[in-house]
Structures are given as C-alpha cells and as structure tokens.
Image (cartoon, rainbow, N blue to C red; front, side, top):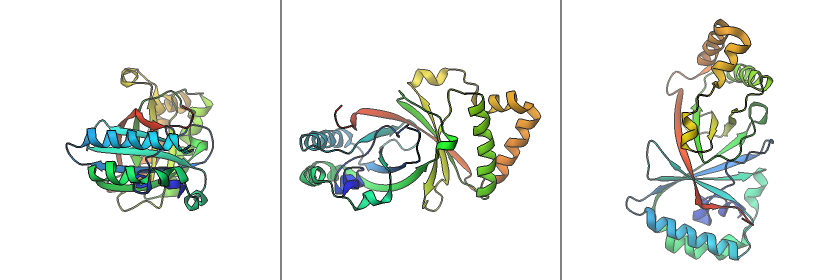
Length: 250
C-alpha cells in the first residue's frame, strides 16, 4: 500500500513518513506515525532507517516523509509525518516499499516497542505559510463546543491575516481522534532553537492592536469557554531530523 512508505506503521508495512508538515496552502491531510524506540536502541534504529531509505531511493520510491524527535516529554519516540491528499491513497500499492520490506523486518522492527498512527486535516483558512523551519511547537486543544471554538479561532486568525502577521501557525483538525487525543492543534515554526528567543508579538499582541486589551480578554474568555474541562490544552516541542527525512530527488 502507498501508506506503507508514508509512515513507519508504514515501517510496519514499509517506511517512515513526510515533507516537513507540508506548507503549501491547501487542505491536504497529514499522517502522523509515532514510534516508540526501545531504550538503548536509538543508534540501531537510525542505521536501519538509513538502510531502508537507501533501498527505497534506489528502487525509485516516490513518497516523502519527515522525522521529528521530541525535545520535551517522552524522549525515546520518533514522529514520522507524511502528506496524503485523499483517503483513496490508502488503497494504492508502493512497489519500492514492498521491495525493501525485509530491511524493515530485520533492521527496524527489532528496535521498536510501540507504533501509533493518527491523521489530521490541514485548515488553510486559519494557517500561514511557513518554510525553512527545523523546530516546531505543537499547541493541542480538546474542545467541548466545536462551533464556538471554530468561531472564535476564525476571528483570531482573521485578525492575524489582516495584520499580515508573519509568524502565523499551521492549524490541523484531527480526524477520528482517540480518547484524550487533541481535537485540533496548531504548529508554531522556528528556523532553529535560537529563533525561539525572539520576541514575537503573538496572537495576543495582534488582538490587542485590533480590539484593545478588553476586547482581547473577551476573546480569550470565549476561547477558554469552548475548551473541554479535562485536559483542555498541552504543548509539545519537536526538532526535525534531516538525516532520516526523505524527499524524492533531494
């Protein structure tokens, strides 16, 4: 199947996963595959993935993926991200991945202790155009009132677009989220870790410019009221691993 090369559950069926959380302005989906790496086996799984990538490239593999490592939280995990324009791609075969399957079985599987996969739909109307980043922060939200959440976030991102704010994030709507999983998340992008020290205005600063402090406070109240009571918000920081990411022709 095509998604075998699009993720490492694709590693299970054949590969890793994506182009850096694809940035072009459309409403594609991304597939996220989180791999638990057995403690002490990070070097072995890296070598196995590099062997798979070499085989996949030699066989003319056409799928792309990016690999991300957490900076905080549980560190012995990898996140593979790949793009999928429509669900029908799940039905397609990937001959290059199938040819390289033995490498996955022999050099990657023995160093994994878990695999979890999820899907998310990009929300272009709320998103900016990020490029050239190697560090991201994911802001995850669980909501109790989807209509109210979408209304207020639409207003917030509309203000950011009107202000031509250069650091707009990329929003995603989770597809079929599991229990306690986020309903929506937004990705903030940074060129490197040093860029995180920059003093950005952020959405609050943009809103204050647009509607004043009182108006901004009212919007944050509406935003908070739309969130779930339990586990409404959490963040996650990730860094891109260029050595294990793959794009045909690079």
